[in-house]
Image 1 (tube, one colour):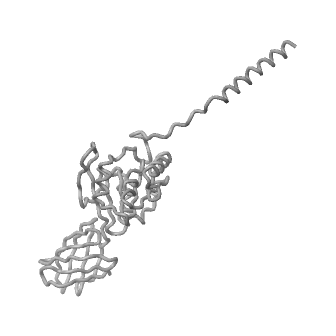
Image 2 (image 1 turned 90 degrees about the vertical axis):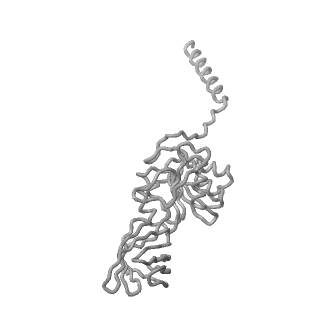
Image 3 (image 1 turned 120 degrees about the horizontal axis):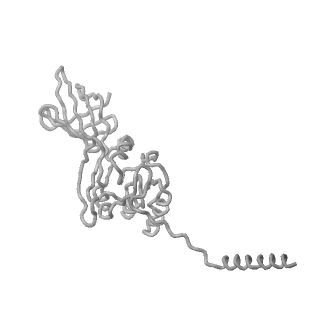
Length: 272
């Protein structure tokens, strides 16, 4: 009987402890807080200073008509900044905690209807609908993404905090002012139209070699061949051949414009 009594006493004590524990307030889970330097996919997280975010959006001339994307969007500040200007934006981020944080911040900023965030691999992301890319990535990341950038619609804008793309010279570089620390430099690139190849220009043959926005080649007419050299700014093209400057716009497999100097007048070309 004594043994049974002691067992019953022990069970009673355990029951009291369990009841007391269940009555204690549950500890609330602390909200996620990002840490500078935390690892992601091929990158660590370092936030772009807000002054630099605004400079990036200024240089890209973001308006409500734009669709902005950020790859490796972190806490979402680039997309939220663009949404505050009326643009629609999507951030792609590997870390799901950062995605949830971005969504909360967009909600608090009152732009959740325009700023969306998805968890995903930035290298696999579909960016084809974007006409502005606003990012803070290493050159090695940007180089891997470069083929996708060049497939964007000509004249799309790419603004990058600090780093550049191998072989592709920025169309504009400027610096943010204010509290931007070591990350004040911003590079702007315009996606150039694709003009490399052979074109029929009047009675002549225009052969173009393209290296991003820079072009070289030859214009062959009537047995004579003249070297050309020029550049693109999105769909705008300009090149010199002899004493003439050909300036105009590219529209897919056609381009046209005016000639200054030389024979003068208008010109047009179609891709062979």
